[in-house]
Image (cartoon, rainbow over the protein chains, first blue to last red):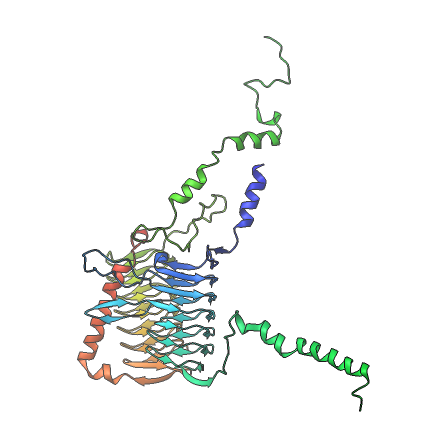
Length: 220
Length: 249
């Protein structure tokens, strides 16, 4: 019975590994320095994504003489999708006579399109980044921002919340309405808006109309 | 010579054909120690640099590939690599033409140096970032001292002058000649056989060009840039583990 055992082991090995917190990481993702990367949960990392966790800030000596723990290089929130071919490299600069890398933060519900390169200092929640973008060193993207495909965000740019960004170099080309990409439970917040707008309201008005027909209208 | 029962297997007889396949699999299965696998898994559980157990399992421990499914390894390209160069794990050197890597170069993980169609020459202190490809085409590719090829960029059969920067996702095609201290902004694809003079910045969707007069006219700016680059490379040398010995042959 060794044959069936071998077959089941093979079928269980899909493309994605699921962690305890529900993150899905492709086996073909190219991740270095895994100990310096945190994932919030339910985050998807597709194939050929490079996460440079090895480029972290060097641990400092604490006051009591011991070394601190290696700081986190890349932290990614919940429900974030990183499409294939992306490169996430923590930002770095010359400071205090040496080159230092700093932590990179990516928020919740962020979508990063394929073949995008990021060296941002922080990307807030509900940000949609299109395909083949470049986000420069220490750029800061606030929440509810949409970045069109092929945009090049220069180094050190701070993007205000609720705008559409596009071009080479990036400019603000529009604004996003209130509630775009929000909605509490996942993308679009679908169900609640659907119930309020349509079907239930129709059901409430129908019986009221029927009742009035039966009584033959108000008696004078 | 005593006569013997043909149903009883004899030592000199081959045993395998007389057994059914069912009984073979049972007998081999029994000899497997059952509980040991879990112990070894815990033993190799991921830990961070301080030895604490890691909460996030990012990489799977792959079982060794079966010999029958393994592809035959290609021989490494004929390469001259300076011992001070840093070639990270997962960086790939391939091809049949010679590859020359000078002192203090840094080849990041998942970068590709391909000499399938022509020789590759990397000058002193060249940095090739992840997902970037340097390919020898035509008469070969030559990167002079201090050239930086950013992540996702492709340089094929071109010549790039001293201290130039090829940005993220750029394409520098066959026959291009890029001068010294140029900057190719991210996501720029140079037209074929382009000639870029020294101190030029190529940027934008229409490949606009302008001259970097700040760097050209002021020696102290150039010196500061070089110093900054040097410091970055010193930091990378501490952070990125080297696997140069694999390619030194």
